[in-house]
Length: 508
Image 1 (cartoon, one colour):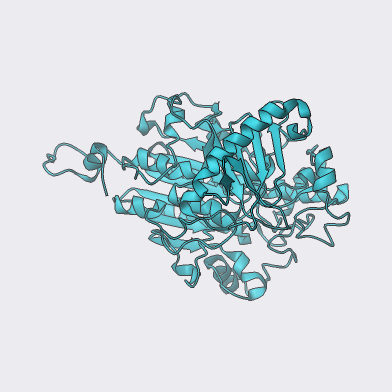
Image 2: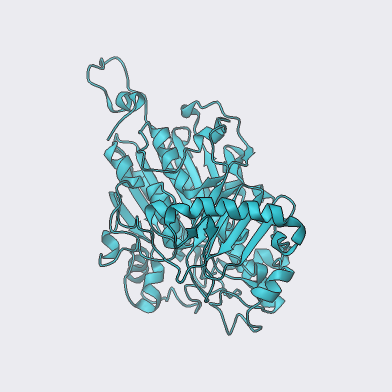
C-alpha cells in the first residue's frame, strides 16, 4: 500500500514529536439503499416526495444530478462500487455472481490503511461456492440484512432474520405475502416499525456509532434493502401518499409498439418486467414504493443524528447513493436492467465535513457525469490513499472543487440479455444525448435528455437526425472496438450471436 504524506502524518510518522498531535483522520459513512430512482428525491425536483433528511444532506453538501449505475442490476452495480472499476474492467456485464476476489476492494484498501471497516444491511456479495456470511471482501465485521434469502424460512438466514426469529417467534416477517421482485402495493408492514428491516438496519448502525471506542477512524456502509421490493412500508407512510398528486408513468409511442407487453394485472403478474396494467394498481405500487423511500429517509435521519450527537459529524465524509433504479411502469417497463433514466440514473449526495477544508460551496447541483465506480476513488483521495492505476473510476472531489477540465465527457452503460430475447444493450451518454444499441438485434435509439428527459422521442425515428445518429453510432463503435471483431468489425457495430454476461477480465 502506498500512502500520501497526509496519510503518514495521520498514522503517526516516525520522528513525530510527542507535543505534535497528529491530525484526526476522517471517518467515512456510505449510506445507500436499493432500487432508488434518481428522480425520487425532493431536492432533485420531486416536490411531492418526503425526503427531508436526504434533502438536508444535499443542502449541506452537493447533489450529483447525472449519477448513473453503469450496469443497472444488483450484483454488477455493487461490483463497480466495490472495485472502482468500469464493467469491462471488473468483468460483470449483467446479472451474475461476483468474482471470488478482486485485486482491490473498497473495504480492504481502507482496512489496510488503518480504518475499522464495518457493514450493516444488504451486501449482496454473491460468489460461487462460498457461504454468504463469509463474503466480506475486507469488511472486519458485518450485520447482514439479506432477508430475501430467508423468504419462507428457507435458505440462508441473515442477522436480521435470526434476530426477528429469536425475538418475535410468534410473528411472520413475510406476512404481507409479497415476494422479492413483487411490485404490488397496498400491503403495509403489519407490525411495529422497530420490527421492520429498515429500522433494524438503522438501529444496528446507531449501535456501532454509540459503542465505538477505538482510536482508528472508521468506514461504515449502511445499506438499506428498501425501496427494493417487497413494497411494505409502515402504514403511516403508505397512507401519506394516498392523497398526494404523484406522477404516473411516462409512456411513449415507441414503447407502446415495442415494450408494451401483455395487458393484464399486477395482481396476476407481480414480477413482470413489462406490461400494461390498470392505473389504480400502478398508483398503489408507486405509493408503496415512495413510502419505502420516505421510510428509508426517516431512518437515515436517525443515523445522521446519532453521528451528530457523538460529535463526529464534522469529521465524517458522508455519501448517499443506490445500486440502480426501477422503471415503475415508465415505458410500460418494470424493475431494473434497462438503459433508460428510471433504471440507470441513481441519486448521489456527498456531504463533506468542515475538517476537510476543501473550500467548495455547499448546496450545489453538479452535472458532471458520475458513476458508482467513482465512489471508491473519492474515498481514497479523502483518506490520503493513492489510487491504483488499474482503477478507472475518478474522484468526485475534483467536481466538488470545480476541477472539471479532465473529467469524462462520455459515460458507458450496458446490460447483458435479461427478461426476454433481444433485451441486451450497450449505451453511451454525454449528459445531453443518450445512445442505446441493442446488441442482439441491431436496433438503436437516441434521446435528447435536455429537451426530452422522459425519453419519449426516439431521434432515430426521424430521418432528419441521420448525421447525429451516425456520429453516436461511430462513437459506440470506437468505445467497443477493444472487445474485438465479435463486437466491432471494420469499424462497424456487429450483431452478437449471444450476449456475454462476463468480460475476459472477470476474476482477474
